[in-house]
Amino acid sequence: MEGENQQSFLTYFISEMVTRNPNLEEDIGNYLQRIGWGIAAGEIYPLELQIDLELGSFDEESKQKVGQAISRYRNGDLPGAVTSICGIIDRITQKIFDENGIADHAGASFVDKVVKSLATKEADFKTQIGVVITDEGERQRTWQSHKKSITYTANVLGAYRRNASDAYGQLTMTSPQLVQDAIDKSLYILRCLSLNS
Image 1 (cartoon, one colour):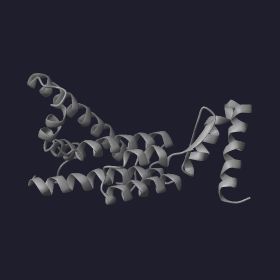
Image 2 (cartoon, rainbow, N blue to C red):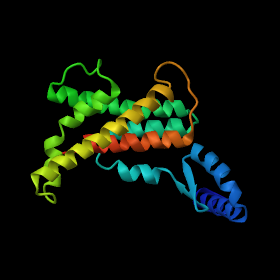
Image 3 (tube, rainbow, N blue to C red):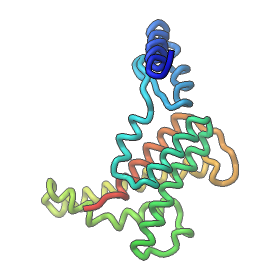
C-alpha cells in the first residue's frame, strides 16, 4: 500500500476507531497533532488547512516562520513553537518601526511593539471600514474597539511568550491547545499589522 492509499486507509481506520469508541478521540487527537493532523467529530483533517487559509496575504518570510513554528509543534517542541510564532510578531513590528521612524524597538515591551505598530495602520483601517461605516463617530469607536482587541490579544500572547516558550533560556512545558491559541493570536495580530488601504 502506498501514498494516497495509505492515507485513505489510515483516515478510515482512525475514523472507525473513534466511531466505535468516542472516548478515544481526545487521546488520538493529541497524537495526531504531533504529526500535523487534527480530529473533530470523528474525522481527521490536516492542520495545514486551517493555517494555509490564513496565510495568503503574508510575505514569504512570515509564511516560512509560521511553517517553522508548525514544524516545531509537530516535532513536540511546544515551547519552541511559541517562541517561533512570537518571533514573527517581533520581525513584523521591527519592520514597521523602521519604515515609520519609530525609535527603540529593542527597548519596547512586546505589547508596546504591537500597539505602536498598530497605530501606523489607523488611517488604513478607517479607510477600509469607511466603505460601510460612514459616520465619523462610529468609525472612531470602531477603531478604538479594534485597537483594544489587538492590545488585549498582544497581552495574552506576551504572557505566553514569557511563561510558555523557550525565549528566555528556560524550557517550559506547555500544551498543544496553548500553542494553537498562540498561533491563532499571532495570525490575528499579523493580519491586522499587514493591513493596507
